[in-house]
Length: 89
Image 1 (cartoon, helix red, strand yellow):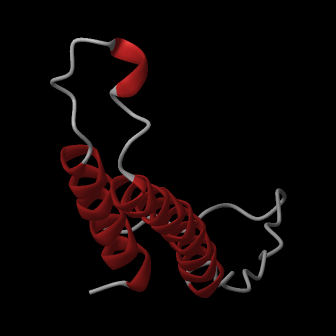
Image 2 (cartoon, rainbow, N blue to C red):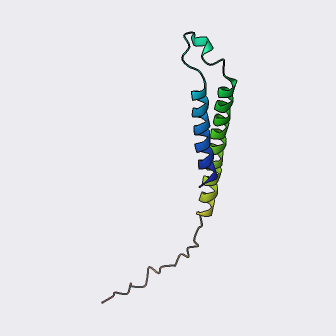
Image 3 (cartoon, rainbow, N blue to C red):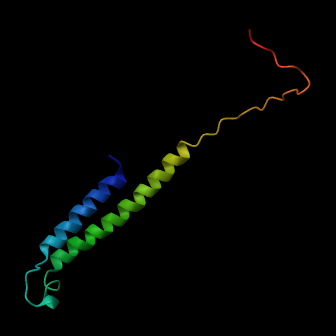
């Protein structure tokens, strides 16, 4: 599996895990996201993994495009306009 795709999957998993680790069922909306530094840590690690995965995928994609862009040399034949074309019977 490509490194960038693997980092994206890990980043998504850690981001979701960090979100689910934060308590969201408080009556006071200001205290919902303050209490759990562990959840914020997982969330931040997940976001950083997502960014690393995106950058790794773009680098891999550029590398693949560079490998697949081989230009074949084409020799242009000079066509004589004066000579009649040969007919195939």
